[in-house]
Length: 272
Image 1 (cartoon, rainbow, N blue to C red):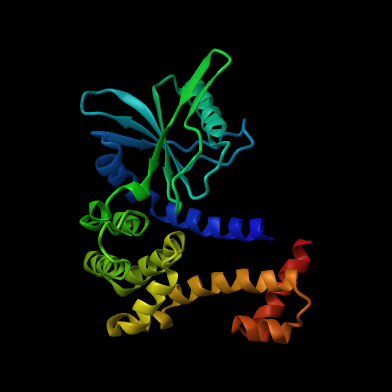
Image 2: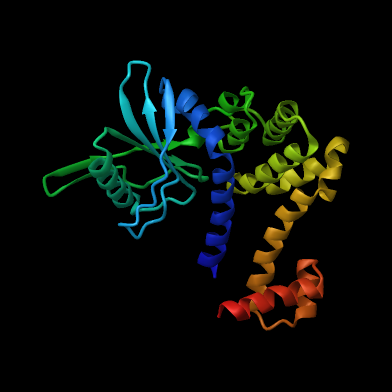
C-alpha cells in the first residue's frame, strides 16, 4: 500500500510538471542548464518501442550559432536506481530516428541527495546523462523570476540561512505579484502546497495560509479544495484497504462525509 500511496503522490507531482512544462523549460535552460536558445520546437514522441513511460519533455533546440540538438528532460521525485537504463533507451531511440546530438538531463526534485547512477561504463560501452538536483540551487535564483511557474521551483531549492517560514512567505508574495487574477493565483497556491510535501513543509504552509488574512479565502477556493480532496482520497483509500473500519468510522477519521467514503469504496470495487 505504501507503493500505491507513493505512486498516487507521484502522479500529483507529474501533473504539476505537465501543467507548467512549457513555462518551466525556458527558465531551466537559461538559469540552470546554461543554454543559449534561438528557437525550440516541441517533439511529441510516444516511444512505442519501449515499455517505459512517455518522455517528460523533448525539444529540438536551435542555438544562436545555428547548431541543432535534441534536449531531453526527465523530472524525477524518487531516486530511481534504473534511471540510467531508461535514459539509455531514450538516447538510442532519439539518435536513431533524428540523427542529431542528444543532450539529456534528469531534474531531481526529491528531498535528499540522489544516488542514482548517471554514468554507465560496461562491456566496452559508455553512456552518460546529466543529473541536476534542484535542491542544490539557492531559492533566490528562482524567486527573482517574473515567471510564476519558475517561482514555484523555489520551494524545492535551498533556503540557505533563511528560515523556512520566511522563504515560504516570500514565495507566496512573489506568486501574488506575478499573477493577474485570483483564479490563477489560487492554482499556483495549490501547486505550491503539493510540492511543499517534498520538503516536509506542508504544515508550515497550511499554518501560514490560515494565519494570513489576505490568503484565508483560499480555503473556499475550488482549486484549493480540490487539492485537499486529492489527499483525502488517498487517506480514505488506505483506510478502506488496510483496516476493517466501517464507512462511518472512516468518514469520522478522515473528516469527510459518509457518501464521500462510499463513493471511493464503489470505485475500488469497480477496479478490482
